[in-house]
Image (cartoon, rainbow, N blue to C red; front, side):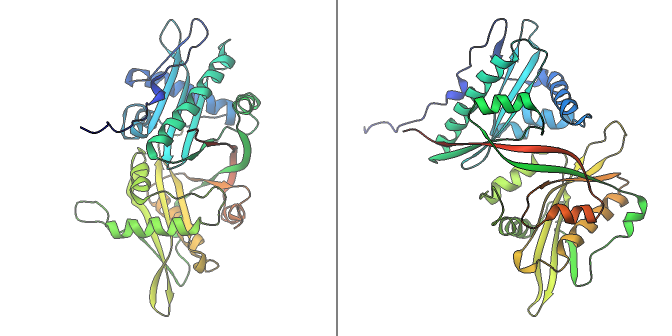
Length: 347
């Protein structure tokens, strides 16, 4: 018998030591209520209001989305989480990190430092399993959060970009909006059982990949990863995927795509629509494709009785997307920042 194949030990099971009386453990279903409270507290501190969807937290901890995450919570003698960190294996060479901390805990600085060390080890372990030699840690705290910035700086992260989180109100009159002349926007085709045509989903993926090739922080995400990740969101709906076409000499040609999800009803009791992705093929830019896609989504939201459409945009987008959104009625609700740490994996 030949030698056994070499394996890589998953160091994410090595729990960090925390200051007394705190200990680290993996979160489970019974922690969801406490984690919702942590996320809500974080949003209140960062934006002055909170729109936390408990179903989304459940998905991250005990649902479909949990499969691609490594997570820890810090608990005291009451076993209630007061800190939570999650590392999401987003794609080859890319790990998203999210840390939520109860700032009233006296030992929270020490807990945060230990959790960010663990998060880095978790990201390296997942990168090894993928067989890549370099990975990027990516966290997006709220702008102006000096304490989070201090923790990230100590952990070796650097601030790289600013993101505007924008919102547009929707009124019943918006149901009359539609695409520009020369642009056709249609939902992806679906079979009788409600499932989408795979060919249309692949065109959406191709449109988005091509449209972001020249964008900051662009990276390749495989088609299966792209679809699976979006389906993990409790707000995902197949009837919230649209394709745009323009007329050319060769006939209708795919020109762009938009993928949206449902924002759960909050304190106002009304759902909203969130633009997860919008992309226009570079060869079709300047023909009103983006405006046509957005008009379609706004009209759809109005028809469904929703009160807002939200999205996120790079404040330094080379396409000046933020100016387009403002011209169509969007305003900035709050701002986040991208902090990166690039790691070359040791042998």
